[in-house]
Amino acid sequence: MPKKARNTRLAALQQEARWTNGDLAREVNRLGTLHGLRLAYDRTAVAHWLSGTRPRPPVPELVAEVLSHRLGRLVTPEWTGLTPRQRTAPVSTAHPILALAELAVSEAGNGQQNPSGRLFSVQEIEAELGAAAKLRPRDSDNASSSIAQRLEHLSSFFFEHVQRYGGLTLGSALSRYIADETSRLLALSSTETDGPEVLTALARLSYVQAAVAADSGRPGLAQSYYQHTLRLARRSGSGPDYAITLRALASLSDNLGESALSWRLTGHAIDVAGPNAAPALQSFLYSGHALALARTGDRPAALRALATALRIHQENHQASAPFDTYTQASLQYQRALVLKALGAGHDYLQALMESLRTRPADHHKALAITHSEIALALLHSGQWDQALPHAQKAFTSARIASSAPARTSVAELSRSIAAFRRRIDPAP
Image (cartoon, rainbow, N blue to C red):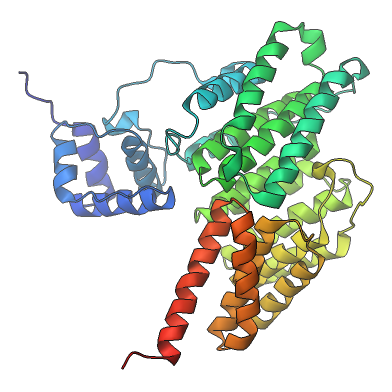
C-alpha cells in the first residue's frame, strides 16, 4: 500500500498563520459550532491531516475559512491540500435561471439529509461583490406578466408562512417547486423567460428559499440562494431587489459574527438603491446599516443611520407584495438590536415593547423571539414578576412556530429561568 504524501500545502499555511496543531483544531471546532456542527478535533487530528489524511466534508471548507480569516486573504479548500482540485466551471458562468435550477434540483434531491453540506463563505460573497456589474434597469415586458404573476404569488405565500411560523416545517417543499418551475422555464423561449418581470419574480422566489434555509439553521445554503438572487436581480436590472438581498446577506453575516462583512454589504446596498429609492426600502437599508455600524463600534454613525431609518420610514399598507413593505414592528425590533449593540439597556427594552405592540398576533416566530428577549432583559434586571408573563407567551408562540432562531431564543430563556430560580431558591 503506497505511503500517503505529506500535506505540505497545509503545513505551509499553518506555519504562515503561526498556529500550532491545537490552535488550528480549536478554530475549526469553533467555526463548526457556528454552523451547527459538533466537532471535537484535537492536535492529533491535525497531525493526521498533515501526514496526508483527508477529513470528510465540510471540514476542508472549515479549515480554509479559518485560515482565510487568520491570514487576511483567500484560502480555498483545494489550497489546503485537504480536497482534490475542482475541475468544474464556476456556477456564475451559467445563465442565472440554469444555475438556480441546478441548485434547486440538488437541494430537492438531498432534502434534509445533509443539512450542513454547504457552509457560509465570506470569500464567496466578497468575490460576488467584486465581480458584480453595474445594474442597468430594463423596460418592463408585459408579455411575460402571467408567468411573473404566478411566481410572485408563490413567493408572497411562502414568505408570509416564514414570517408567521418559520421555515423548518417547509423542508424542501419550496426547493422542489423551484426545481420544477425553473425546468419548465428553461424549456420555453428566451423571449418568454428573459424579461425583467420573470427574472425579478424568480429572484424573489430564490430570496424566500434563502430565508427558509436561514430560518432552518442552514446559513451556507441560505447564502447560496441569496447569491443566485443577486444574479437574477442583476440580470433583471432590479436595483431594489439587489439591495434588499445584500441587506439579507448582511443579516446572515451578522448572525455568524461577520460584522465587517455586514458593514460592507449594508453600505453597498444603500449605494445600489440610491437616494430616490422608496422610503420603506431606504428605511430597511439604513436600519441594517445602523446595526452593522453599531457592531463595529461606531456609535455616532450608528445613531445617525438609525435616526435616518426612523425619519424616512413610511408604511405602505396598500402594498401587494412583502418586498414593498417594512413594518413598524420590524423597524422597532431592528432599533432594539442597534440599541442593544450600543449598550442602551432601557431604550433597548422600550424598543422591544414597541415592536411587540404593533406585531401581528399570528406572527408566532417573531412573537416567540421578542417575548423571549423581553423576558431575558427583565430577568437580568431582577424583575421576575414582570418577566414571567413574557416568558409564558414566548413558550406558547414557540410551540406554534417552527423556527431555529425561535427555538434558540426560548432555549436561552429556559436556561436563564432555571439559573434565576437556583439563585433565589438555593438547594439546602
